[in-house]
Image 1 (cartoon, rainbow, N blue to C red):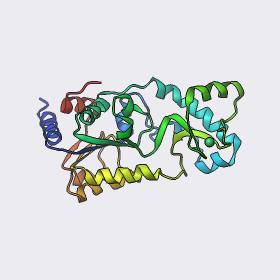
Image 2 (cartoon, protein in one colour; image 1 turned 90 degrees about the vertical axis):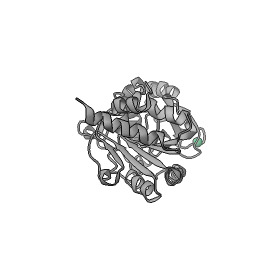
Image 3 (cartoon, protein in one colour; image 1 turned 90 degrees about the horizontal axis):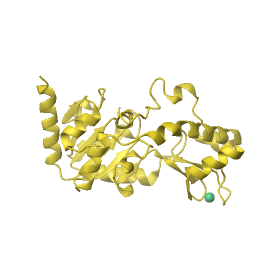
Image 4 (cartoon, rainbow, N blue to C red; image 1 turned 120 degrees about the vertical axis):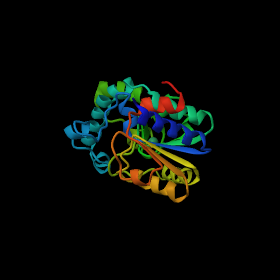
Length: 253
Ligand SMILES: [Zn+2]
């Protein structure tokens, strides 16, 4: 009955099994199955609020307070989320040494939560599960910041005087150079690039599939909707991510 599906899965599994250095690239789609809304999609938070860009954050105390108010509001969803079979499949291949890393556009920390070591997660848009001082880069955990914010409503400031911000990359904020360079190196060195749950529209996501193909790597795209790179892919799966990864890798969340 589902022979097309089965043969697609068999091909995906065969491609995974015959690759020695896999790079996973993940976008919002892998985390929507964990209950995290795609903030860029219709009905998402960005429909209701005009985004506060990085320049405004730096310029205005009110913008900083509003950023933290929104942060703690959306955190309720993020904190409740757990990794799904998609994350588990990625984690299994990393653990087995067949995948060198996962490059992600997500900020939810679910790859780490599923067991991928910190140093093998390359976060292009940062991480929302902790904060950093924008001046000295000191790391801050969110719980103490939240407690203080609930008491005095003031945006947190570092001992050094710098502004503290969630460790995500805001609109208007520079891309993290070290992460970008590592992502490119990994992509150039892989023999299989698997894009999961990304529409591959936004820069820099859009640059990676072609980069991998140019170096002779195979390309697999697993995404609910078609992407602009389906044509150059060796295998395209318009499928539910968790179920597909569970069947292809045998891993369970
Ligand atoms: Zn500081």
